[in-house]
Image (cartoon, rainbow, N blue to C red; front, side, top):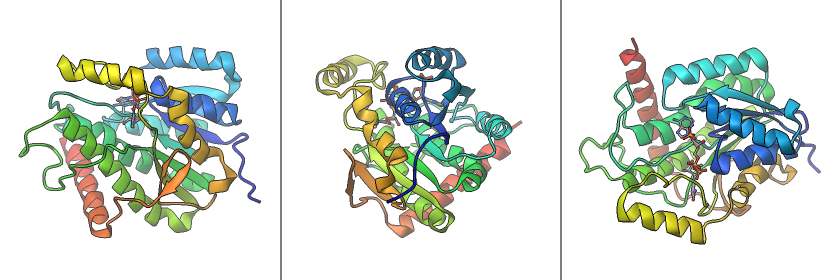
Length: 287
Ligand SMILES: NC(=O)c1ccc[n+]([C@@H]2O[C@H](COP(=O)([O-])OP(=O)(O)OC[C@H]3O[C@@H](n4cnc5c(N)ncnc54)[C@H](OP(=O)(O)O)[C@@H]3O)[C@@H](O)[C@H]2O)c1
């Protein structure tokens, strides 16, 4: 039987102040982990920290600022984490958003892709040294069954007509493809990488979507959605269970493994190169 236990292990959960991320943070703290809540708003992060501290040992909870759509924030976050912890054992990439209209980051990248897809890539890259130092370590990527429309020639929606749904689905397909590639690249380093679907979960992800579609989504989420804790369950399982030790590059729904649908090696390599190009573009745009 495996030795894996979360007791005393350092875990980072992105987007931990709300929805599924907050529930994952609670689940990891309950399993004995030392959980760093990575939140883009310290104010919202403090509120989540206070709430989680009522149910879990506050000594096991920590808050750091992270806006994963901004390179400078990712760098500052990684530095702050490194100053506090020499090792990282679990990284849960969870933060995500849905934008009805096409928006750009200050450095000119389409906001959905910059947040949901490039965000996971850049945060993980920035923490790789800590994950290597903490190995055996686990990366868990919150993705979605709503995954399609990835266009490697138009990731930025400059040629296609923008749609919030398409941009979101593209970013989630990218999460899954990248997750497989990362798993391959880290296979011999004692770092496993798995992606999961949380189900339809009643959170605030569609709360600002306007119009009839927004209203319909909110009603659907409320009526059919799982609780954030139910949505968090598979991610917590992947981070905590000895049963999944050594399993990597897999796709999970409700604690069950499914064949990864997005694993084509050529596409994986092309996406990785596209991520690197966007990171370079962002660096050259920096003041
Ligand atoms: N809800 C579902 O049915 C569903 C289904 C499939 C997959 N998912 C995935 O589950 C994950 C969590 O979503 P959720 O439903 O829990 O949504 P949510 O309640 O809206 O929570 C999203 C979290 O991500 C954070 N976030 C957004 N942009 C960020 C940025 N640039 N930097 C750092 N943090 C950022 C938010 O912070 P703020 O509070 O500051 O905005 C919030 O903490 C997402 O990856 C989503 O795609 C959700």
